[in-house]
Image (cartoon, rainbow, N blue to C red; front, side):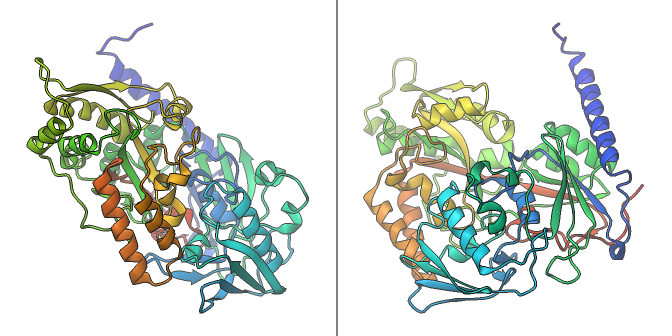
Length: 542
C-alpha cells in the first residue's frame, strides 16, 4: 500500500518510537537496571552500536565493528595516548635496535588469559605471525621476518628492513595477543570457533552473545593493571536503525553511542542536556570521504579532465553547507589530524574558468547544448549524508562545467563493491580509513602493485606512478621522523597533482556519552581502545 505525503512523517515517527521502545526493553532484559553504582562499586554501561561484528578476533578481521569488542577482550603489546605516543600495556618496555632491524619487548609478569593461563612471549610470537599471515592489511607486518622468544617474558621481533610503522601496529585494534594454547590447535584461525567464544587477556570477558542483537562484556577480575577495569559490565546493543539509537540515547536507555557520523544526528545530540558528545578519538582511524576516478577509462585517463572536475566540484560548499561545517576538510591522501598530513598541496578551490580551460585543452569542447561529456557516478549505499547527497550535489554542480553526471544507485554494499573492484565505474564516492600510519591504511590505495581486480579498497583507481611507488617504499623504511615526513609530503603533493582521487572531507565521526561518565576514551583510537578507564562519576538521570 502506498503512503501519501501527509501520512509519511507520522508513520516514520511511530516506527522510530516503536524501534526505540524495543531497544529499551531489550536492554532492560539483559541488564535489569542500567543505573550504575558509584565509581567504587563498578556499575554497568549500555552501548548502542550500528557496527555489527562478524566475530570478535581483530587479528584476522579489520574494521570498527570487530575492533571495538576485540580491544576489550584482548590486550596488545602497546596502547596509544591522544598525542600519538605509545604507552606500555602487555609490554612494560620496548627497544628498537640501532639498525632498526629488531624490536625487543619486555612483557609484564602478571598478565593472565581469561582461562587463567599466563601470557608469555610464545603467545606474542604466535599472534604476530598469525596477524602477518591472515590480516587484510598485508603491508602492516610485511617487514616482519620472525619473532624470537629467548625467555617467557621477552619477545624479539626480527625485521627484513626497518619498519617505523611497527609500534603503531602494536595497538589494541591491530595486534590483539591471542592465546597460542587456544588458537594454535591447527584449525583455520579465520574460522576458528574461538572467534565467537574468545579467550583474551584484556580488561573484559565476553560472557554473552546473540548474533546481530547484543553482546555482553564483564569485568576480568584478574586483569593485570591494578584497579582496572572500573566498570563491572558493558552491554552492547546492536541496532540497524541509527535514528532509533539516537532516540534511546536521548531517553537515557543507553549510555554510549559511538561512531555517530550523521550531521543531523550530531546536531540533535549536541542539544541533549544529559549527553556529552565529542569528535575526539578518531585521529588514528583517519576516515576520509572522497571522489575516486577510474584512471584507465577515457576521458578520465587524462589528468586534465580529473583536475577539471576537482576545480569544479566546490569542496567548501560540500563541507560548509551540505555538512553544516561539522566535517573537517580533507585535501590529501593522509587524513587531517595525522602528524604526517601535508597542508601545502594543491587545494583545488572552486575555479570554473580553470576547469573549462582544462577541458578545452583536453579536447572536450562544448556541444551546442553546452555539454561536453556524460559520466556515471556511484556511491556506497546506506550513508546518505557522506555519499548519496554528495553525489547528487556533484551532479548539479559539474553541469556548470558542461559535465553531465548520471547518479547510479546500488542495491546494497556488495553490489557497489563488485562494480568498483572490477573497474565497472567512471567516478565513485568512497570512504577509506588511514588506520594511523600510511603503511597500514594509505599505501594500499596508491601502490601500483596493489591494483588487484575484484578486491575492494585496494588500488581500484588503477593509479600508477613509479615516483609514488618509490616514495612509499622509501617512507615505509625510513626511521628518521623528519626524513619520513618529507617523503610523505612529496607523496601527497604528487598524488594530489595527479588527481586519481578528489579528497573532500574527514568523516565527522563523534562519540556520545551520558553525563556522569568519566575516563572517556579520547585517545587516537577512541572506542577502539581499551575501556578499562571508563567509570561512573555519578549516576545518570533516572
